[in-house]
Structure formats: structure tokens, C-alpha cells
Length: 400
Image (cartoon, rainbow, N blue to C red; front, side, top):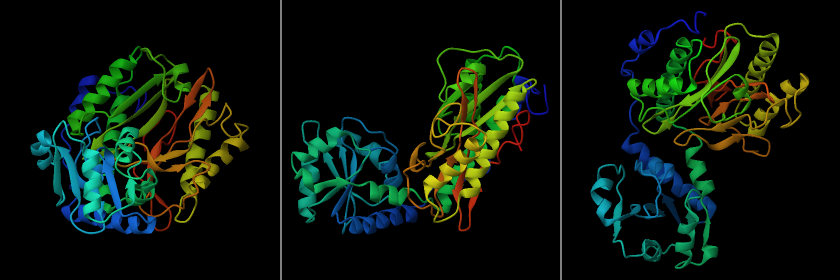
């Protein structure tokens, strides 16, 4: 079909899938401790005495505990002085010991006990009155704490948690780079095995198995494969489609390496592109490039979104979120969560800083017909931005 699309058999693609050898190092114990100290500094700025980090990506960030939240409270309490305290069910102690990466005193609770009361008691022991609560915590956690603390003494910890997590360290960037490199290879092979009649379900299975073969944490973290008119829906529509000559294919997928995400989208044509396909694809490419060119320290996040929209509006698309045009933000932060602060969208006035990472994906939707999304991620440097993956050169040559 072309040098990059439809030129591989399934066996040829699978032969290129070997365990990844250039492994990024794990986050060091010293870096975890630095994160705790950074959180303490931001707590002082916020005017709070303690930080409670619930199970989820932020607990992984501060303590390497990779558990998701459940109805049982697992949380880390950071105060101005002393080792952090970690609250956990008694029966989970062994599992906790196997993953905990920081010195922390354990406060274990039995099934009939109230862990929120234990958090309040621990705060009293350390003279802490105001609690900054992880914004990712369930409302039930806030309700439980409010039974033992003045509700007005519970504040939003977003300035602390986002303030720590938004700017990635060199070690974090290396893990994200590995994840992106893996997914870019998977995208190449997925385009390579394209053939007439290929089902979206078959391609999703291949992409997941490819991520697993390379050594990603757990296969694909997500996978969207859409053909033809279905590409006009940013996150796809149900049902299996089969690839036909002259159709666009949109593949959006990613994986994690030690919890850190990749997220890459490619849109390419199977066969010969129509003039309209080429026009919209090239506008998408120009909008993505304009957003990237706008990135530098001190620039507001919303200005990156504005740069992409200017390109589209000059071509008669939009304005704003109107279709044909760009129906969503230009980009989102990425790290231990697939979507996290900051966001490249109007209203996010935070200035970009070195180490911030975000997607650049100003998708164009032509309703009822097709859509084009090109998504690569960048990180902010001292004087601009650097891609994790090189953008697509052409509609029939999706890889540099």
C-alpha cells in the first residue's frame, strides 16, 4: 500500500516485538524524599498544617504505592515535622510493605474502626489544625473527616499536589520517553499491518499485545481505533468497523512504564486520500505546529490553545468549539495520570514552566464525515519545547 501503511504481514510485525532493552531507571528513594519536602514547602505557602494524600496516582507519586482508591481508606498524612504517617487496613500491611518507598509510620486500622478518626487524632498529636485534602479523594473521605474536624479546616490540596506533580524531573521525563518510544513503535506496526477489511477489534488486540510484548506495565492503558466516518467522533463510537480503500484511520493509544503514561494519536489514509482529506490533514498539522511553536516558559497555557485555533479560524473553521473545527482543548498535562494539570485551554492562565508536559492535539472534526487528530506530547524546556515523539510528516507517511 505504501512504505509505512499496509506493507507488513502480521508475522513480520510480531517479529519486531522484543522486550525493551533501553530501560529508564526507577525513581530513586532520594527523589521520593525530595517530593515530600517540596510538598511541605507548598503546604506552608498554602497556610495549611497537614496534607492528606489518598490512594491513587498522587499516593504513587509521593510514596510509590500504586493502589487505586476503594471504600477502605489508604492515605498518607504529611505534616510539618516527623516522618509521614500512612493509614492502611491491618490485613493489607504486608502488601503495603512490599511497595512503600519512603520512611513512614504506619497507622493500621481494623475493619470495624474509623480511619478518619485516626487521621484527626494524628493531626492533634502533631498540633495540625488545617488539613489540605487531596482533590482526587472521594466525597466520602471528606464526609468522614468532617465528622472529626471542622469542615472549614479542610481545604483543597490542589495547589500542593499539582504544584509538585506538574513539573517533571529528569527521571520522570526518562520514564515518559520510554513509554512514548514504545507506543510510537506500536503505532508504526499497527499502520504496517493495515489491509482491506481489517477489523478495528483485531487492531485493538494487536496493539494491546504489542505493548505487552515490549514490556509495558500492563498492555495498552487505552486504545481507540476508528475508520471512516467514525473518526469524526473524538473518542470513537461503539461497534466494529472494517477498513476500506480511501478511508482515514485514527489510532489513539498509550501504555505506562512504572506508572508514567504515553498517549499518541496518528491519522492516516488507507490508499489514496481525497483532496478534502489532504486539506484538513494539513491544517491539523499546521495547527499542531503552531501550538508547539507557542510553547516557552512564562507563556500562559491558554495561549498555546489560542495559537492552534488561530490557524484553524484563518482557514474558515470554528470559531471556538464550533464545527467544522476543534471541539475540545488543544492539550492536557500527562504523567502518572493520563490527563492531569496543566491544560492547554482557554481559562488556564498558569504560566508554562520547564518540566511541564502536555499533549498537542488540536483535532479537527468535520461532522458526519471524518476527523483528523495528530497527537504528540512535549515537555517545556528553558527556551521552548521538546517533543517526546516526532510529529507526522504526511497523511500517507505518518511517521518521521
